[in-house]
Image (cartoon, rainbow, N blue to C red; front, top):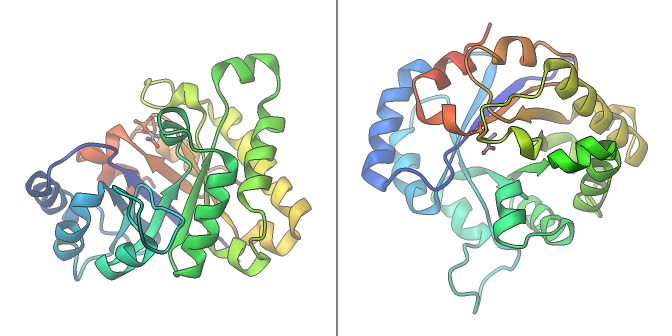
Length: 249
Ligand code: PEP
């Protein structure tokens, strides 16, 4: 069975609540699609107004992070139950910016992935190499480790429903999109890794996005690749271009 494409916007630390609602109103008519899942992953404070603004549309709301404990003395953190109650269906976990600036590791990402599943939130688990790693020829070793540790104790049935975003760090926010061949090669490698860890059926079902300076011009060729099931989009998710990326065909 063909995998359904999924295009998610990662708004990062952009848009106040009122600006967020205005952006949703602008993008709503542009992202209508019958065959692509559309997700807006927004800052925590924007989740409630955005969830209200997308009611009755094809847009789902995602968070950009989540803590792995249920509740308690974790000042500043957001729990999975809080996200669920606010209407969140997806959560981006292990984005390279969180790994770099907030010391997230494969182990903490794994705890968050498990906790998201416990609460019925679909993880969008990010992985990707630095430029140095690519130049040293260790891209696939590094990513396989990120994926294997990130998925520890995740069942095959859970893995089938999740999303992995391959985001080469050197392509994020730089305007340098990976070539179609580079992106397809790594996404195919991730799928092979899933087949090894689980089985072919799980590898066939899991959705793998490419992310890194995706725009309306590059999306069609990227999303046409056999192992690329859509995109995680940063900068272009804040512009009308996002509608063109969703409707890439
Ligand atoms: C991202 O933040 O996940 C991302 C891919 O950003 P950009 O599209 O701006 O490179």
